Length: 187
Image (cartoon, rainbow, N blue to C red; front, side, top):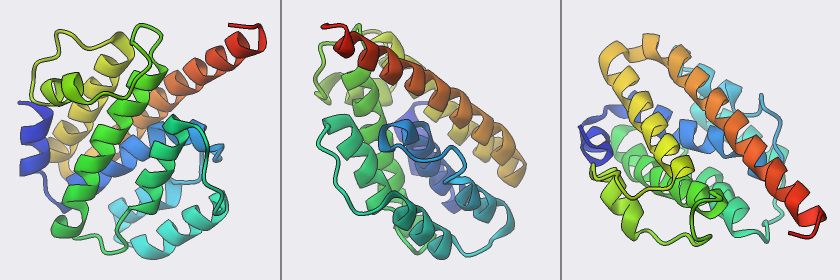
């Protein structure tokens, strides 16, 4: 099943987890602590106050707007997260986060052309993954896996979804670090 179909069929918890997982994987771009979003993950499991945890995460990162396109996309994911965690409120956010995260991975993928063009990303989300650069394809697989875990296992799938996000965050952190070292060494 394509990512677009999974998002269309997901329930409120799956949608919130999907959007949160995308944001979590992109957290290194914002300089946030790895544990920053952990309370939001916990609220998906125990039903605690999503809105309060969301405001704490936003406050922890401050109001400064990044000047880098990838970091700006990540910041917008956090800023646009709905305080009300209902299927209607989180569906468009989850979809936007999915696309933003794929755009970020495309911008950072050494095999890509360095643009955030969404043409190939839309095709990938619809199931045609043939022309996606490796980092983008891996992110797409993680997004699909998160939604499948929640659809198949409900709240019990949250732990594995979080594990996938942590894995993706490590990958992105390594890519960002490699890019920074390349920039310091003149290219």
